[in-house]
Length: 151
Image (cartoon, rainbow, N blue to C red; front, top):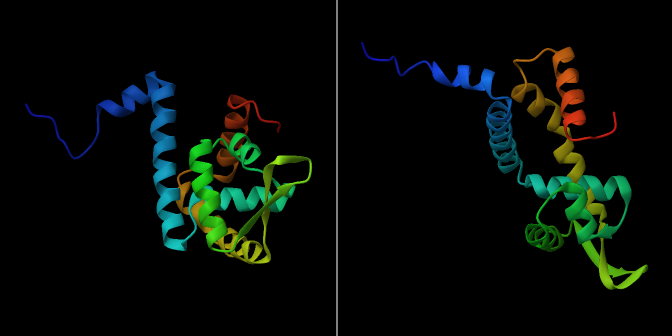
């Protein structure tokens, strides 16, 4: 008897036994969806996160952006370069540390962020459509605990 290849049979069992594997696969699926969504809207995921953080906390160094957003610092350089070329951020000498630069969101960056943020609720609805609102809240709380984030 041959296995029906149209319906997965082993992975659900594996995912139930190995939470780490399930979480990795779910994370990869969400990351692919986020990249596709970002590509459709012309602002990369990393770029979006940088603009969002700068809007929320104000100017900061690339090192701080890299650490807070958990983006490799070599990738962060490229993200900031691209945002600067597009006119969404500017780099200025950091007044607290003249050896570094502070990255600052521009008015154009604020407008671009607002456009990007407008599409997020629909993206989240499409991506997490299999979960109820309560389940989404529960997942968020559990992931926060797993990542040791404040509630």
